Structure formats: structure tokens, C-alpha cells
Image (tube, rainbow over all chains, first blue to last red; front, side):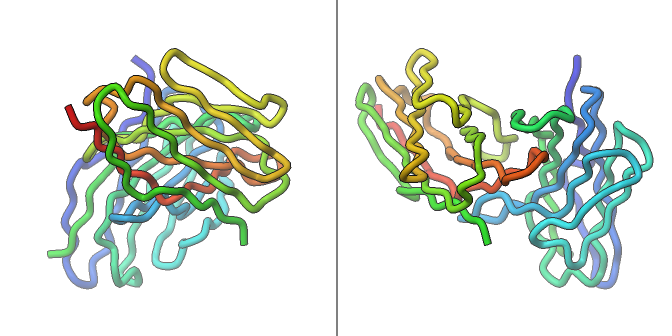
Length: 113
Length: 113
């Protein structure tokens, strides 16, 4: 069954700690995206990657880092520099051609301890 | 920068009535406009999309209209049902050969039985 898998579903971060959110897809999609969702706001783009070993900053990249070593994987690290990390994080992917819908994972809810 | 404005932020209708959600975008190069439905705590799911070479698209009770001159697009849901209750997001593609989307801030639709 093809799709996008995000883990964990819930994550807690301690002060000064880096945490990594996993995103894996088996749709053979070239492009992958990370969004942050806060209550009352739309989805805001953190980072995106159109091809393996390449990624670009989105609108709110500060305090986050990513890697794209494999086509199917696009992990997001929330660093200690991100002072307000509590949010719902969504990963998405699309095929390489433009103007295609983004397919989303089930999300990871990150909270501060 | 580019943005998408979405109205209203909340919408309450009686079961069987119609619901209309409107979005305005700023990037004249945008040419792809998807709509997503998100139930509480779940992933956004694509419900309908439209490309700029089309003015209207319909899928059963759901329709989307696009006015490129005015940079407006709207979602129309007819014969609403309680299971239509959710948050709806519009989005517009950014210009260029990417699938980057800019999302509206969402509309919470409540269908009263």
C-alpha cells in the first residue's frame, strides 16, 4: 500500500535537545516537503527537496535542518535553536513534474516538556 | 511576498445547505489550485484541484471555480452533510518548475444536522 509514513506520531522535546522527525515515502516521488501547522494558521513551508542530495529553505527554516540522502527519506531535525517548536509537523511529497497534488503523511505532534 | 487569503475563517451551515469558501492569491504566475480537507488531528486530503486553463471543475457535490483575471478561486459544496464538517484549505502554486504551494489559513466548516 503506497503512501507517506511519518514517525513518531507524538514527540516530546526537552530544553536544549535536538529531535528528529522521520518521513518515508514509497510513492517513488521526487519532491518532498516539510510543513509546520499551528492553530489558526495554514501550513507553512519549512524545507523542501526536489531531488536527492539537494534541498532548499522554505519560509520558516530557522531552527530546523534536513537531509535527503535517499529518494524515499526526508528527515527533519528540530534543533535547540527553534525556541517555539510546539506544533503539528506534516511531511508531503509530489512527483517530479509541476502542478501535481501534494500527498501528506499523518503528521507528528511535537511538544515541549 | 506571495500569499493566499482565505475567507471566511469559520462557516456554519444547516445540513442540506450550500457552503462557499473563497480564496485570493497574489502571484500572477500561479497556475495550479488544490483544495484540501483536514479532519481534526489528521492529514490534509486533496478533495479537488483546478489548473489555470480551466474555469470550473465539478466532482459530485464539490465544485471549484477560478477567475484568473481577478486572482480568485472558490470552493462550492452543495447539499452539505455532517461528514463535510472539517477544516478546508485552499492553496496556490508558486510560479516556476516546482510543486511548491502557498496555503490559505483555513476555513472551519461546521454542518449542523
